[in-house]
Length: 529
Image 1: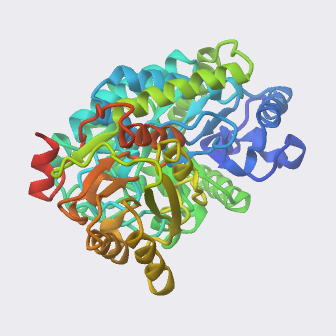
Image 2: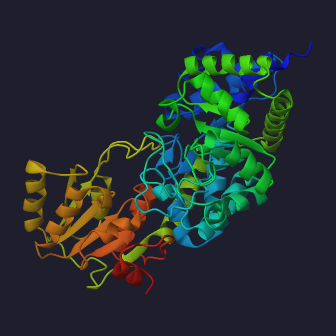
């Protein structure tokens, strides 16, 4: 018997969950459109593959279409498989290579790992053009400017498809020109539709042309497109007016997580889900609360039954989602099983990309490479914290960078300090620098952390060769001493740090070029020299 339309409301939901085995997961997952895998669900490759396999088996036993099994695997700072898979450089690193073929290779490697685990949809690539240097949430997750992002988004989608995995372009209509993290509040973008078409929407047009399997919404308000100030995720003017009608997109629209504060601070889960579907979304995503999922399913069913949600529109959404579920199952080929050999090959792909990405922003005193002899000392200070935004998967920093640098002739002393060092730790790093022959400061968003920027500038007063490694966005070059040699790694993942060390020790030459503009005129002109 065909279910009534309201009874199919669960098919409009993607959900995250707790648990490492199917036995620990709620039975309701098999009724949803699919599941989202997070780091909390990943322990080993064998366990993860078994979890996914058992989730699909439960759905098949109930006569359902194959589940969408999605994951945020962007590379760089957003990697849910970190610890079992090959660490990949960030999107901005790939933009810095200037070679979309590198991006295709990297995303094919990512896709092969996902496919080996049974995952069918990567919630990547990021199609945002990072036009605001003070963006707290996108940063190195973006490939760069609009044109660079368009070329590399196209390549990333092709790479995932090469591996038999679907691709999601995000965050429509662009999260790159914000100074608020939508995990914590609602960003407002004061751009007109014409301005969006000229910049932010360029990579999304490319993603549509490249066959993106879905497009994810951004929780951002665009008052010049929708005067109500409604977040794009729940704005009919944005999702239906711009994405469907202006750009001609007829694929699946999925939301970013509805538990982010840009939405959750103003709307309960059920109402948020109804408003998103009414605006034109096909899939509503909840990352961690199954209670919120239950509320959303009940609210959607009620809105369908009452006629608040148009039945014909719901049918179209369910049809789009069904096509996606079938297409992903068809796209997924017989994946090679997870193996150390394939992971090693993927690590080689990552290192090749990182070597092509690392960029010398400036070196006005010709300090590179390090010129130290045995017995001399390098002082390394890393400014580090945990994840800089809730989207990130990075954890505590280690002293691996210093260990890599120690393969050179000089001795290495390394300290890890907070993002805004003060008091005792501030004094300790200055004391250590005074006895060193060269100083390497690994910065992380010094542009947003005044005490970090101050510490790096004070290190220059020691009058020793100073090397700054911008381990996130290259914008740190605008707040560190002009005489310092500044290197952009676009991430602190192992391959990027290895590539930086090779440049510091003179083992290789830097090949990358900045994929974004710096506001500081002298730094920008030096980078383009």
